[in-house]
Figure 1 (cartoon, rainbow, N blue to C red):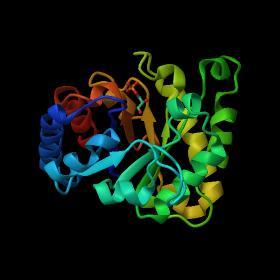
Figure 2 (tube, protein in one colour):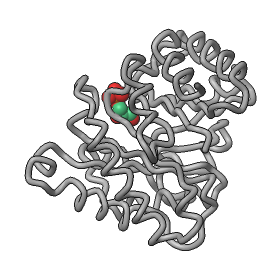
Figure 3 (cartoon, rainbow, N blue to C red):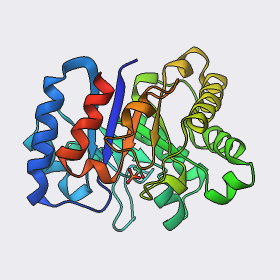
Length: 247
Ligand SMILES: O=C[C@H](O)COP(=O)(O)O
């Protein structure tokens, strides 16, 4: 399966950073069909980024599950699509925590995103306390069961990102054994939910992915790519990760 490397710029980036988008898109195009690359930029940059690099996948980092209404400050899937987004991240742990998003909220967003034609990355991941209590696999399996869209899916438009919360932005990456165990557990839940289509859903790893650990992570069974935060902000950091996935 071709790996998907998605950058998540979080609350970083203005029009002054479009040169990074341009550099990332140009090298990604050279790598042709060997890897899929996307950048999920702040909502304020989606339109300009999409216009700057036509044909390259620009995404959003969140969306409201409804199509329209009195929701001050929110954006719906069709607005993101209209701005030029081709994909959206939902259920990132930073939103689950800071905005109290539940599994049900995440599922509603994922279903609305797919229904609008966006590709969707659903994030799951355990806290350090849950891992230390031996509940990591149970926690993440429960999130997968309750956060993923219900019904038939187009497996090519859905991905799951496993991001242990304690590995995000900390420089502390999960061990390859732990990644392998968790990705296998997620695969089992995907197949239970979707049958054969569940075998084709990419499972990304996220949490302190850097140029110097990407190759090792990509060699782990069932790792279908990465969701990259800090190292996606600069082409010089992100492109070696993209190249490792294309190798
Ligand atoms: O969405 C990306 C993840 O939160 C990982 O962030 P990070 O690569 O900065 O650890």
